[in-house]
Image (cartoon, rainbow, N blue to C red; front, top):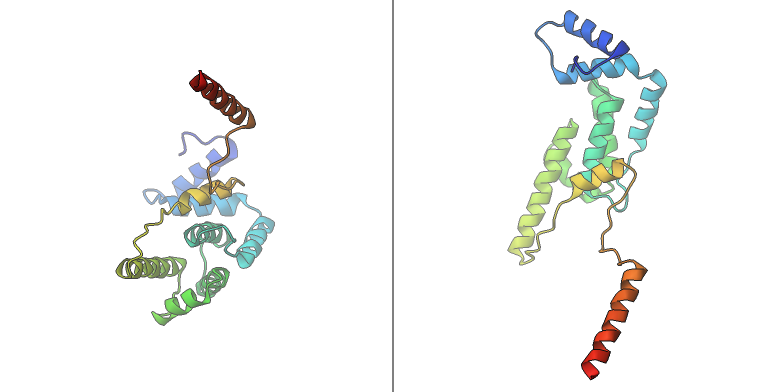
Length: 185
């Protein structure tokens, strides 16, 4: 890590390493870098974005949870108990699925994002098991991780096969016509 850093970042990392000999944990280093280089305005903006975060229409629940978790880590690197409670409340509100939130809370109110994610995964696994018992054995492919990565770049995945370019369609039509003429000979 230090070998690839240059300039002020290298100096900051060297100071951190010297101040914490033998105790290097990436999460702590990451928090130190963020608090050193990210302005208060950026942190405030990230917190506002976290507060407003909601599951988007085409977004899977898994993708939303992953996006929210990443945003929460940036907005609150080391949340206190009150902040953690708010983060979980906003997460549940943003899921837009009251029935799922009720099922999660019946099992005991979650206090961390990880607890919410665990409850959601258990609930999704339970739904899949129920579908199998009821004879609905369709196994949906979970591409939520890929969708989240693509969405973070500002793109969306196509849900259907794209149409071939017009020139290819025209060429295929011409070939079909030629084959028809040849077969008539």
